[in-house]
Length: 112
Image (cartoon, rainbow, N blue to C red; front, side, top):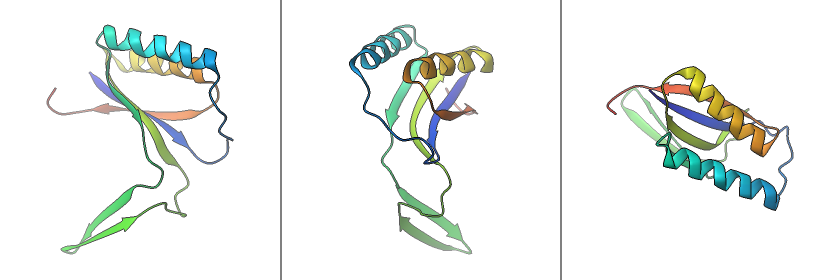
């Protein structure tokens, strides 16, 4: 099963520069997850992005950031695990390293 784990930001936490120990721990975690085949892809996302909307045959493209957005996805990891519970455990390990934050885990359907 594949799950998309997204780190979200609602603007309530102040970003801080990652310390050297956290960077080392995250590097080890990513290496372990990659080596085991659990981590398929990971990355941070640009703030804002571009919105595409189709309605009544008309397509509208709008560049962000979007002031009306209450929450934004700021990073992601695509993982392949045996169950949702395993995806939750991977996410718990991630937040155990980075500290405060929030995220969403969603199962990915489709060809693997």
